[in-house]
Length: 162
Image (cartoon, rainbow, N blue to C red; front, top):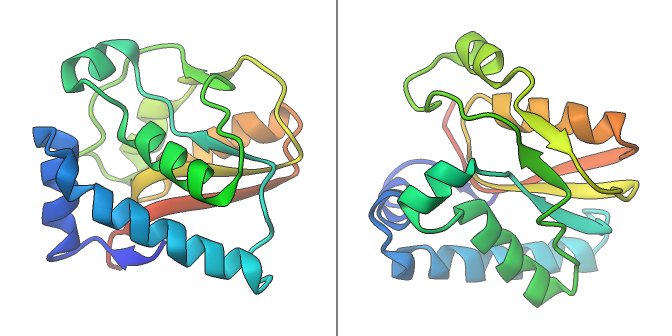
């Protein structure tokens, strides 16, 4: 995670994610691809066999018009030559927005929400925009591990401070 979710990154991600102003997400994704490329080249990070974007419920995707995790994964995959396994995992039910929930409530909110629907390789990277409490990636990693993933990395644009 190259950035902390604070000014100006939080505003850029917010305008991209909630207002559909994709021009604010592009420089972050391009810079992230460069940072990831360096980390892979020097061996600091093991190359995943697939990038798995955090799935979004179909209704929320229709409302927003895109899945930001999918956009990030596609940009990274294109730059790094890593396949994007967009259809490997799906959300099986819609949940309340995580924005206003604490860590425990987020975990409870996400229980049983993801389902692996295709084969996953042993080494994967979950891709998302922001890691706040880690609840989404924790629950997603658990279902990927059950499906056979052995090494699971988390690649996100930003992490909340603290």
